[in-house]
Image (cartoon, rainbow over all chains, first blue to last red; front, side):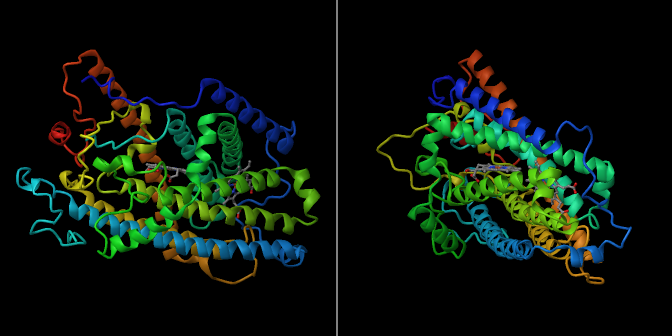
Amino acid sequence: MTAEEDLPEVSGYSRVSVLISAVVGLAVAALSLFWAQGLRIGYESLYRVNPSVEGGGIGSDWVFGNTIPALDFLIALIHAADVIMGAFILVMVFIHWAAFQRLAGQMREPGEDVSEAVAADGGSPAGGDGQGGDGA
Amino acid sequence: MSNLDHGKFTRVTTLFHSLLGLDVFLLFFTGYAIMFNDELWWMLTLMGGASGVTAIHRITGIGLVALVIFWITLQIISSTGRSNFSKILPGKDDIDAFIQDIQFVLGRADERHPSARQFGGYKADEVPLLSYIGKGVVFIFSIELTLLAISGLLIWSKTGLAAMFQTKAAAMAFVTFHGLLGVIMLMGVMFHIFEHGMHPAFYPVETKAFIPRSMVPEHHGDEDEEPDTTGIERLSLSPSWRTVSTIFGAMTVIGIVSVLIGSIFDEGYPVPRELAIGGGPSSILLTVGINLGMVVLGVGLVLSMYGNVLRIRWEQQLEEEREQPTAADGGEPQTDGGQPNADDAESEN
Ligand code: HEM
Ligand code: HEM
């Protein structure tokens, strides 16, 4: 069998739709660039302070400056969202970590004799570190 | 069985994934060099200081706008795209898959649910386009990227900002909001890298997002013969997997926890919301942790490039096989240690 014969038939995206989408994407990007930047050369510096804040003295401005309570609330909200999503993502990391340990336990150990491993019971051979791979 | 498993994505999707990844990594590196400038001072310096970093962030920001709009348009105007919509909706299978993953971890289930399975193997036909994690990733990343692009453009436009906020501080608060929004994406991508880099059957990288479906030969066993297992027990574990996955898993966890803590302390760039003395930024532990998180992202960037190297090699091999049809199929497509050897491939139907 040649490689060609067993390659699947795939109906992907048509050239035209890819092309149109690319043009739309670039056009919108160009428009938003124009809107955000105008035709000025260089980048704006009005509202930003150098990231390394050595100057000081801006703090008082901050305390009295943020007069929009909604924005304060928005920031509190997004903090909460970050923490909740962070906890959730951590749980997902741990589940996958543990699942991977178990799957690894089902696999052949590196260098394991191929002929004996045909008995596919998924158990780790003796000498494995026993992590997870109890083969149920 | 090819160790590539069944391909899922089209060539356009795989290329899009790589471009999006590259762009988002650059946005991460520059954006968080600003937000965590205490901890990532070296990155800030490396990328040309304040002006260099913000310039790169803006250029890649425009790139992100182009990519996001491209993708949305493509999904709407093409039939392939429209047929995707039903495939990303969460269903009962996804809840079952989540529960079964927990059971699998606890040893109460023998295998992962098809809607959770990354390695399909002999049972690849059961595996849907997206796992339950995949669906969640699509939702979270889409919402995040859209909101980040909108808020980013608003910050950029002086007139836009001035129209919305009267004071400098209020404008800065909006920048903070934009940065905090990205933290979810940041943590999510770290998990994404761990998930697709450290699966023992695919280690060091799962090629599904890199080698398009059109290039993955499909072998179907005798139809009447239901496979009992995915066949994962026939694959050999890479000698380095245990060590590397443990270290990388730890780095992922530390990275996520650190950027989360950092985002709470460092939020008020350039001035903390409450003018606390001391606190997070000076902590050495936090500095180490956030830097480890950046290493995780760096590994992701490398893996994404490596995935493309594998695609090119795979393409070349397909070419060669076409030239000499006598060559046995299913030869060793990848050269790294952890992959199953040619024996596995040939013994399969
Ligand atoms: C910022 C960078 C990235 C973004 C925004 C991104 C985004 C996505 C999205 C939205 C999906 C589809 C949903 C899913 O299946 O999870 C996906 C799938 C995938 N990504 Fe990424 N990705 C990034 C980086 C990476 C990296 C570094 C790797 C390699 C280690 C990777 C490997 C994969 C794989 C293998 C899949 C297919 C998963 C499946 O079986 O469904 N991605 N990615
Ligand atoms: C994955 C997407 C993105 C992430 C993770 C991200 C992250 C960040 C972060 C962390 C900051 C610093 C916030 C702070 O100081 O607290 C920032 C600032 C900024 N971002 Fe983004 N961003 C993203 C996309 C965009 C896009 C699409 C644009 C514009 C089109 C954009 C424009 C800006 C601008 C103008 C700033 C202010 C920089 C300055 O201080 O001059 N960002 N971003």
